Image: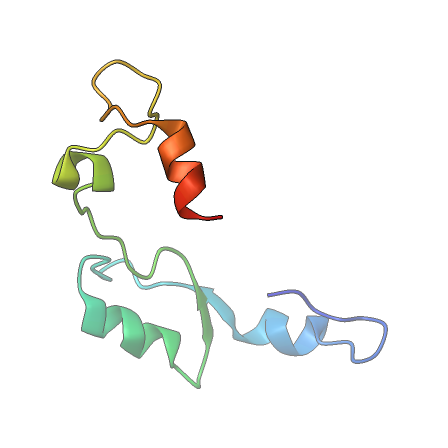
Length: 84
């Protein structure tokens, strides 16, 4: 969020409402993150939600770097011809 002092000086209004997320906030709880994000009494700041998920590479076995050893070999010309 950025206040706009040129057209509508919101510094004072936001300064009164901005607060850190409660210490007991659990960033792994999606519902609690949404509840905090939709608060009308304050503007909370902090990590609302954090999730650890598998990467595309670990999930599919495809390397994000096709020229790196271990990547799935493919013919670049064949790929380019498919999009002509």
